Length: 591
Image 1 (cartoon, helix red, strand yellow):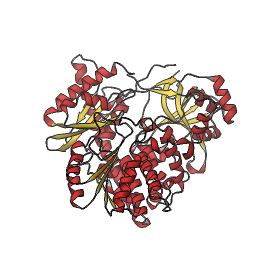
Image 2 (cartoon, rainbow, N blue to C red):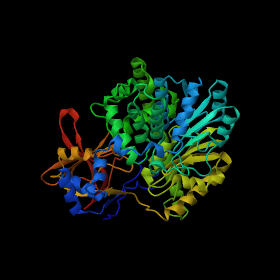
Image 3 (cartoon, rainbow, N blue to C red):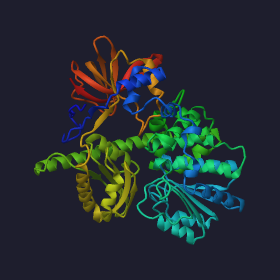
């Protein structure tokens, strides 16, 4: 079922050009017979049975492994990860020879948590190591020559990269020339031959395909620790103790939460809930997480605070926080990251508003030229755009206009740094590869990417990027939609249903939170919260449910008195000690 989209009144800034694009509702194909079988087997609400059937599940082992994944049955064999055993042996040989190991990791959550996994294991095993995180502003993404020189002159014997290295041919060549042994652990797509590392671990390399290529860097780092525990023998170190760190990158790096990632995320969250690690305890306290830690706590609470360090100051703060044994130091670092995240939110808000205004002005100009009021791709830039938030702002543009977006800030004199986000079915890294003649460098994956471009080529890049977007948009859906798992009614929406649906967690890419369609509701009340979100009260005539639409203050269908259907995620609000059923509204249509 496809229901025509509404468009809201749009952005509230000057110009009032293109309206915000509201999502359509699309119901997955239903299989009521299989849903009944699943309901009986699992002894759950019929709604849960319909959700699982709509997602292709049938009674059997696959369902059992999905509901309750275990390390024994849910993880792919480490021997399938090409060069893993060789990497563990090389690290052991370096340690036995008295050598020091330099760990170079990216400044996002995946790289920082992966680096912390390995560094913390090294500390426990007595292996001498130091973590090097590139400065987002001075060094940019990836391994850089300055760091390689510093590592070589500081007496390190082995250089280990985590979450980059696949494209660092020049820097790895220099490392070899300086006498360093090199190991690359990365998960980014390859566009050519493997890099000149002594040992290369990347599921995308020829002859590997480990876990169908979905593992992130933190997950691969955990597998390295697993191999190292076997290589070093019994030292009282359990690889399971590092799942609570590996799950951070797994959840935050937008990899599909299926297969190996689902196991690491689910078991890691269980460990994170009871963790005695000072840094994780401090983060839970500063965020206010009580009880079991869920995926949303990591995605919207822990993750943004860890990312804030690399976006605003330096990522090494995060490694210290995640590996320190000093509770007092951990508390201070967690408070610092909390303040940095608040600063990041303020900067992001300013840049977002200016970027939206830029796009709206361009749409107005396009309409005045008789070229229509839609763009195939969005490009916004300003020398004052903080390069630490351009990725988030690009994502906000995609959410607002539903078009691929590139946002740039001035990285250094004459050089612009950009970040790109895509839409469903649009490969960012492929699009960037198609316009690489205009770029200094680029990288990324399906949903996100980054690049740098000389100021003389900005306009040429923009034209080429928009043209490439136009070509790719011909083959994909141009309007956003929400996949609805099943239809339900308010009588079926109970606290027990919410609890049973939560049993399908962790949720994320590849395993989204269940979405239900509720029809025949009337809008009784509507108000704006904190000038940022919309709250409504809905009724079927007998029962009521509160609906929340985040980061949107209006919707044409949500006028008091209107009859609507909603695509929503049922939830429980425990504010003030009272349990109240509520729904996160993902799409709304009038009836």
